[in-house]
Image (cartoon, rainbow, N blue to C red; front, side, top):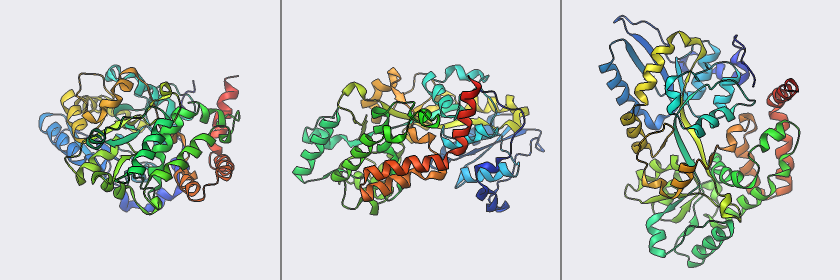
Length: 432
């Protein structure tokens, strides 16, 4: 395991463009002791859709706590604002983000503190602790975020429509294609709505296919120079291309919101996305009965696995370790079962904390996967942001040239992932 240096490196490596946004984007920094004697603890969260919940929790906490004032902020474009503040050495006490590439960058730049000693970590499900450890580019001592909420991706489907038509949930790729062909032949609705104008939406079915069709350590092998993506990505690329046959005409012209609305209105039977889309769908049709099943990409039903990542975790910044006890006290409050259940009910989310929680019926069809820990993190969480992998997938879907896609992906990966590849090489060399 690699140990972290005690001194923080410049955060400029995360992108000089963040600094150019100027002082206007920065939020007021945590001022520590307030005039009323309370210690102010500042959380900055990227979950704009959960603003009302966290504002209510903040109000409750501040009404009942006599020595801590919680300042919970959820600005637009929060991650960019975080990066800007880091460049200016204006650190919130806690950044609330997902276990993704931004988290890995923050850990790599020594921005975050090790919270493996947090007493409540014992209640975090082991699968999500491991996901947080796996996101970093090389194995690290410690864990740098307390997992709070997870989501799941796969195939959303209209439960009432399936029941009315007598359609069975597919468990293999062949069954899935047969079902789509049947729905298409009946001509009443589309099998799928895709909404691939917003390139990130392509990553949802892509991730669901990858976890079944390629080794879980394929990115590590590529970074270590042991393989190429061309060795792994042909089958998932061909199957991703196949989805276009079952979606709307010209899916690159329709946005994520268009897809959510169309699915909500019953224009398609399925929508390859994740639980995070359900609140948006229900805003268009509050009475819709939505289910989620593991997208079958393999011919073997036993290969099915649910893509589930840490959608929100509490990450203490290393610059504010002197507030560690107060930060832990706030996290304890947010992790209280009633508060966590409220969040899960509103956001259709999965708790990362063990306990007697009630999951939304949305998750009924993947409950056994969650119970058995048959979950794996989103592969795209390890993709370099500069490569714009979602845009590369969209370009591929538009031209349909699998060979060109594979060659281009490998070439761009080497160009945009140089720092990580070098870090992996150094790590491997140090391990002998």
